[in-house]
Image (cartoon, rainbow, N blue to C red; front, side, top):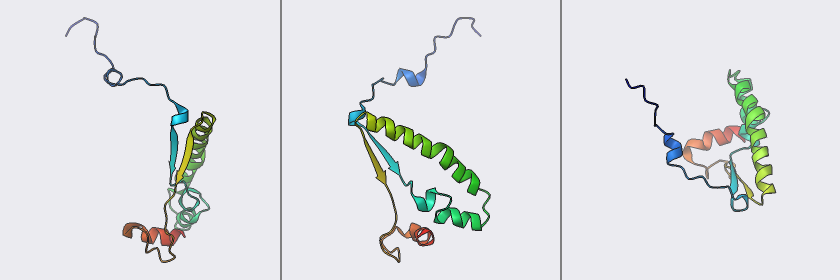
Length: 112
């Protein structure tokens, strides 16, 4: 074992290029922040509550206390800098959910 000071560098920093953010040429893409699955009174929240899921409070507390406030902060900064905020939602247009991916049809039907 050597007593020489380490010359090791930060591996990640060695391979990163620092670039200032140009907010006017940036976008925040918000994916699937929908009432049906993202709100405790939405269809998923009601179902989890009715089924007495032990994850209900954990899920919606985190969404309310962390996810939403951070999305709002990011969106405010981006808009102030001239950037775009886009919302991507998913679901079915047809009542029978036939236009949804097969693995999501039951979920969409249950959450309305």
